[in-house]
Image (tube, rainbow, N blue to C red; front, side, top):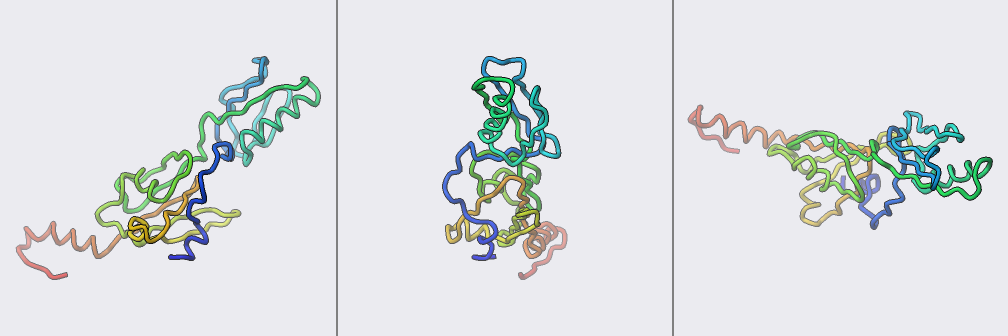
Length: 202
């Protein structure tokens, strides 16, 4: 929590360019070769191993590459044996990997698509905000870094006040909003008070 949390999940550092998106497994690609409809393809699915298949070229590893990087690779392979100065573009049609999971004490937990720069407050808003019993000082962001599961705890109250930076959220992150036992007890008491007819001090 605090400064150490931002070492793991940093605050946004400027606006990332669209072309910096990295293709992921199960994404769908549109591949267009100029004036060559026979080898152009729409809806090419990146398989679970990160591989795509194209006519003439065969299997190519696509996961982890930007659209521009993959287009350069495919262009080079076509130019090696089949075409002179081919012109090829790659577009990500649908992105399965550009999603985050929001769990815990939010109004609508679920898996949400994200596009472009996204922060922790953005993802809480996607889940329609926190519930009445949320522990705003116990919001966990879980991320896989170099294949290892890491996490950091953030204080939403401090972020909303502007005391702390709003951390950047990456595709495939999981956000868990904690549950406040004290708040839950308070709301339980409010619901029970008309029946019990008693007063309680907290």
